[in-house]
Image 1: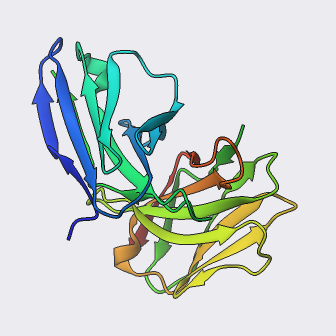
Image 2: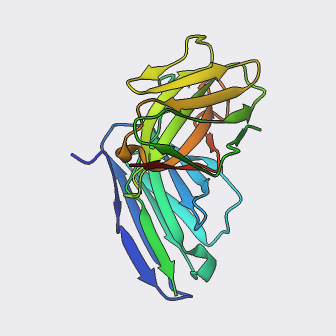
Length: 114
Length: 118
């Protein structure tokens, strides 16, 4: 059983389009995250939700809007895509209520904007 | 704010030998967690080992062990008997304890690409 899943795994789209990436975790975790990994492999946090509540919002363009319909899902919607948005986006989750912040990562979504 | 620094962008090691990846961090917290994650070419991020800051004993997981120097804020990863499957990018990360209002946020280093040569 997949613990953290993302769809799609690959996404190729043109500049100016709007796209969404979905993430689901079946671990019963309270906290979910979105990370961006750029072409140099640098991994930066974008957002974090705890029980559907936004708790971390790094300096990310407001074209990026996370949505958490329930604590098992955290979707990422991107408006007006730009070339610089090309990257691998990782979803992750962690059990907030225990003293353990190991994060479980999804397989990543490679977004290519042309 | 927490920062994590990995000063070795790339390293290589011969199969069966030992290699150490360095990581330093900076935090004002007294309790926190430190992690090493592995990202092989398949792209999947996998936890390798974790260390709780209040534990003085260095964590060990099979061939992987850490040298945790709290005063020096150093957290290096030692891989013994390196195997070809260890070829990957390795990320050092730190996180706040749950008592902190920003609990749940991890800070990642920029990664070290390790190549194990046959």
